[in-house]
Length: 504
Ligand code: MLC
Ligand code: AMP
Image 1: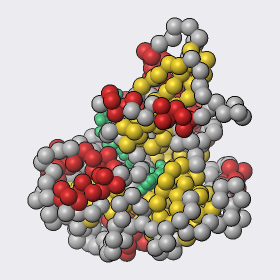
Image 2: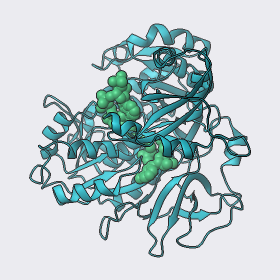
Image 3: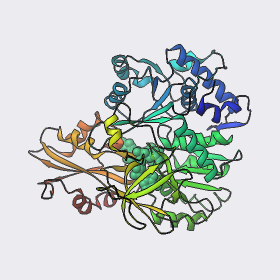
Image 4: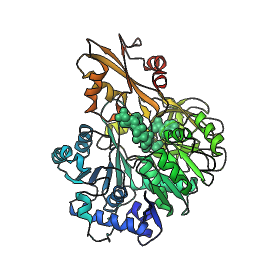
């Protein structure tokens, strides 16, 4: 019996006493200890009725136990469905209602709110807190630390990650065992990971970057991770001397550069800094090299595709580009209307094909079909070009999407919520430059009456995660529209481009 992903990443490490996770406070979890725990958790899942293919929805703080739950879910043949800890119960309610998981795992502080949501979906609810206590952990204690991984082949699903729709409902991207494994193995080769690597892990583990790119790459090589609960400059600077590599969103690097303790000496022994999930400004790339002597390796990925392109490990890492298509991955640029491939240097939509590309959106065959070409290429919605040397640059987005500190925000979702506030006529939500998060959310609102910023913000507070809420609201008499009546967001972005940089 084989379990495609678990066998390749972990089966050989069941009795391995080398470190897997270095934890704050000096504790270390070996592969053996981590996998023993994941076996116990896998047993709990099975006892809770989780069968192969069932979804396990998880909204919990980052912890070793939470990571072990990911591995336990894969081991039990089920489908891991991680959720951003910033989501409010109403947002979680949609994901749970759509994915119909067998089990929902949440922080005990959220249990009262999520219990009825889980019950409505026919799911059981268990808790897991940041300190690894809760009913899930209690149930795991004392269980056998042996568990035969449930058979799963490469095409079976290992995870569903929700990614918001540009026009409406969020879509669950279905990722197979082989989508995840093939990409991890490609990255190991491309970025030269080995068992000697110690990765500084400060990313959240509910997204592709921290969950799959970081964790699967390290597990595939028997390396280890300094596993921090999140990005805090003090902790990262303290840990860097013990790391060999770091992965981050651009905000990590701009925050480090803003800190005088971040010096060439501090990172002299690091072999690789990787950036992705949002554009790294060429200026940041240049400043980083001047300060540290390191050229950040920028790569490009998506929830639907894992990683697509990367700057070279050897060879020139070119600022402002995302490098070349990864081995086994094909990238082309097409005309958005005709779908015809464009020659080098011309801007169009980036399309992706390869073993990394997902199996489609959960229970949305039409949306899935609309985003694939007949020859199997996935239409990313990112606008870019491939230059004569093969370097790929992303120059914009065809999709109406804001990426703030590596989190995606779909303006439509925020606009719909603002438009519900009494006294609001209509709104347009845009992303403008933000000194810390790269882009920040600004809402431009037409009102009818005396509704003010506080009232709007209060109404949004209970409805959506904090990171989606506008950093600023601007009231105008009317929104600029083209002859077709469509709001001209490019004009708004230009007009208000300094709104968040001025405030800082
Ligand atoms: C926090 N806030 C944000 C925010 N993060 N607002 C906008 N965008 C964000 N990303 C809000 C908080 O709610 C808070 O609100 C205020 O901003 C300040 O919070 P903070 O304490 O400074 O934030 P912090 O906890 O330090 O978090 C910032 C961060 C975090 C950058 C460390 O956002 C982060 O870890 N981002 C990484 C996201 C990621 O992993 N993306 C990968 C997606 S996978 P207030 O007002 O209440 O104080 C993908 C595919 C690929 O894209 O290619 O990898
Ligand atoms: P997500 O849906 O969270 O997976 O976000 C994927 C999107 O992040 C992509 O479609 C891109 O728009 C963006 N992205 C990821 N990496 C980069 C990068 N290196 N440069 C620019 N944009 C990026």
